[in-house]
Image (cartoon, rainbow over the protein chains, first blue to last red):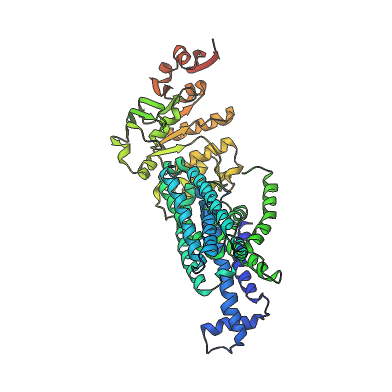
Length: 334
Length: 261
């Protein structure tokens, strides 16, 4: 059963990627799409498709699909890692204050700093929020699990307040609408090759780091006392994992805005289907996160004539899963 | 018999300033089960955590001859002491096979994984403890007694020299409690581990399964020695405020609590 699920998750990625390239307002048939991609790699070998198709596939669809995949993979793999080291299946990486920090930064940029790129200020906001969370947890909470979670909650609340203040002071209703739309998340803003490249490099680096300590995450998930008794240094190692996850998600969130619930739910589904061991949870969360986000983004751009914010879609898609999980566990976490 | 662990004058106070241990000393000899017996909050678990350096006390512990335990890396100490915490289900439902294999952590850095050979060791240990049929279940499906055996298996895979068990019989019915204690005695008799320190709440089981007993009250070792010497009705009465009937039958020491008077 487990290997069947593994196979299904494995195949979901290429299938969702390929189908997504054909989907969209402008009809592109599969043959043309493949030729368009090939014509970039080997300009002289294939009969080149029309210029419009080439532009749409190579400059719009491909980076967008890749951005969605990278976003989903990053949110899921960091969510899984953080759940392990914080011993809590109900957290995602946003618990570190990153989302509120990015939201505050983005709102500030949109409302009051027009010439400065939004993603730059959002990234600074995310990093600043994480840095405050981390400092409080390490200096006054001795790096314990509860300290990280509590200071994350506090910093989230603080930056939410800052965000509200910026919205309140913002004089221009059009800008206010832009802030609101940004907060609901969109892959569209990240769908450019230079951004995809930046996201790809940072996320790959972080994912490789997390994957290389996948068994250690199991040990840390046993709790500090048992981890020490097994020769680990939980406080130091936890701090490292937290920093790596924060880096990955800060890079993502500053381009895409806040896309909720993916980092929380995808690892859950993986644990239910392929088992709890992080040697499986990490890679399969990445894969399932990628294909889930690609499909969610397909729905966001194809369902109606205007784009639906993807944060709304992921939440709506995930809610039924939660009800199912609740039913399955009969109200008890096991 | 050779001294495996020598505990010399442990003192510990919790960060809030509450004194938890005062001048705790005892020797653990090869082949022995030492039981720490005492009321709730007397400091039994604190002693175990100090041995493991989960807590950092004053005083000294000498392991395996004359090495001070605070001169060792945590990883080296983890190859000596095997910790069986009070049984609790882990947050994530790992497969039993993988859960036991986590005992190999002290032999790995952050980046390496347990090998096939190490997983074969898991199977051998499981066979020895007669829990082979549990290997492919998840930890969440285990009963309390099974979980306790799995935790013991983890320390054996760890190749620990001395086991430290925190209330191995807590929440277990009599048959499971006896099964677990028999298993502990068996692995010491076979020489798989050299000795064990455990905390218990039941004076009757303590009398049946201990080679040495340390009575702990208010962070001090009030009495230490073989069960016949330590488990006396007046001593136990002074610690628990309960009167006991202590007698021998068929060469076994029986300790019966009678009631508060």
